[in-house]
Image (cartoon, rainbow over all chains, first blue to last red; front, side):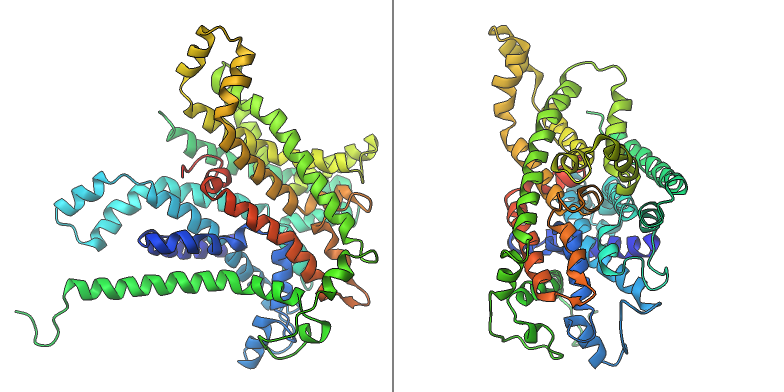
Length: 217
Length: 285
């Protein structure tokens, strides 16, 4: 699930961030609206997903049912539940990527861009050869942060499907929660929790590596 | 030689690109807003309107959901009070511990600073359950389960890293000459901290305070695990509304509105510091 959501959020966020930075006036008013999904509680996001995806009286559910794309439950469907969880996750966290990339794009130095335009580069070339390399640290920070946040994901999946029909949406955190606090097998549960900690530890090492090596002032 | 009738001049392309960008921004803003707006609207709908199988934008607004949830029979006002107490205590605890720690990291030589720094970061990055399991076992023995101080302590585990990182980044930006000037003027080192540096750090302190409050207010896992029945906070009350008798959508939406609106207002205040707080100072701006 992590590996599908990350690229989509990354690309969408980049496209919107690029559009946003070029519009000064719109940015001031639209950025607070765009970051709403990211800042409200994941529990509320779970409720948003639950209510909207309900095929009987939810906004998106009724639309999908009228379009004939789904029959019956969406979050109760073995195949559709993971897809809808991923869609809600993309809805929630793309604003985070947009925010970081906008901040990053605005903080880029002007000198390389002026040099590029003096050298006669077209805007497409400027984008590929100047913007993208300058943004690389921010890309890496964004990817690492999103990876660790996706790894920490618990609240909204718990509220929306609680592990899903069967175990289709059961991610490692929910699995650890179930082993520990529903089956009360604290030995096995502690082992699985330790594995989770080790993975996040390694990701944290990468994050520190990338942020401190660029921090030589 | 330009092909007849197919001359594209620069300004034309520029205008179309602009229109495309504006449309994209508006569409993204709408997509971000509408599902949440549906919940807020549903909070004001009566039961028949929420369950209606067609989407209609006009309905008779009613406050009955709020009255049911937050009235004496609902109990949500107690959860609201719990959330508020936990949030404010958490902010106080994190600031009292975090700001001196950040100042020390910034100004003094700490043995093993890099390793300590890294360890503080891991507390923010590890999954909640990894800390929740041992905390549950310990709090059981310490009789802290189901108490508000227990939940506050649990929230501090990941919020402290936020305060330390944001404030250290800010303190690093204050030149050491100010410290030295104050020391030359006769202040002691503690007084330099409280009378000179802290007033300068006001805006950053408020920003980290708001962020800590937001994260504590939104938190579910620790509130559910370690709060239990007696110290339940607002988000932890949501699963309780999905009963065997049916889901109380109206009350859920009303509670969700109360959970979400203060956060949006707070976030609007600290917009400038939002990026720094969320990326732990890695991205300036």
